[in-house]
Length: 235
Ligand code: IPE
Ligand code: IPE
Ligand code: MG
Image 1 (cartoon, helix red, strand yellow):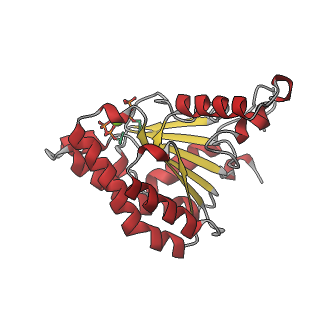
Image 2 (cartoon, protein in one colour; image 1 turned 180 degrees about the vertical axis):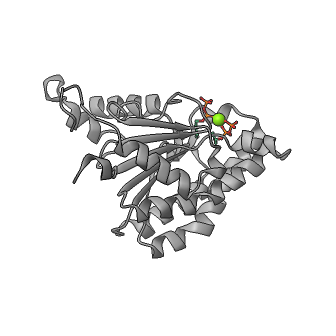
C-alpha cells in the first residue's frame, strides 16, 4: 500500500472545546457537552467506515473533577444517558466498547451500567471504541507500577511489553494518530506512555462541530506524514 493511502489502525481523540462551542452560542456549558455527546455516533461511524480498527475517546480526565460541581454532575449524567441511548445501537453495529480509567470512583449504578455495556459488546468484531472516562495518564502509570510491584515482577523482567500489559490499554496497539479538537497543543495527561510515537493533529474546530469532513481532513493529514520511529527511513 502506498504511503498516501495509509489508514491509521488506532486513532485517539482529545474531544475538547464543548464549553467554548456553547459560549459562542450564548448557551450554558452543559449544552456544549450535550452537543458533544450527540456527536459521538457520527464520528465513530465515520472512522469505522474508513477502516480504523481502534478509536479511543478522551471524555473526562482525572483533573476534570476540579470543575464546578454542577458541571461534573452534568458530565456524569451525560455518560449514563449516552450509554442508555447508544449502547444497544453500537452493539447492533458490531462495535466493541472498552473503558479506560478508574471505574471504582464512579457511583455503583454508573459502574454497573458501564460494565453491562462492556459485557454486552465484548464479543463484537467491529471497531473497538475505548472511552477514557476518569482517565489520567499519570494515574494509569502509577497504578501499573503498584500492580507490578504487588505481583513481584522482577526488575530484570520489566520491559516495554510487560509494562504495557499493566496499563488500562493492555491488548490495544499504541495510537497511530492523536487528534485534538479546540486548538490547544497539549496532551492534558492523555496516553502519556502510549503516545511515544503517535502523530499529532490539532484542529481549531470545537468537538461538537467535528464532522465527517473533519475526519477526512485528519486522515488525509496523517497519510502525508513520515513516521520514522527514531530511524532514518519512513515506516
Ligand atoms: C471538553 O470540553 C470536554 C471535557 C473536558 C469534559 P471542555 O469542557 O474542556 O470545553 P472548553 O475547553 O472549555 O471549551
Ligand atoms: C482535556 O480537556 C480532557 C478531555 C477532553 C476530557 P481539558 O479541557 O480538561 O484540558 P485542559 O484543561 O485545557 O488542558
Ligand atoms: Mg477544554
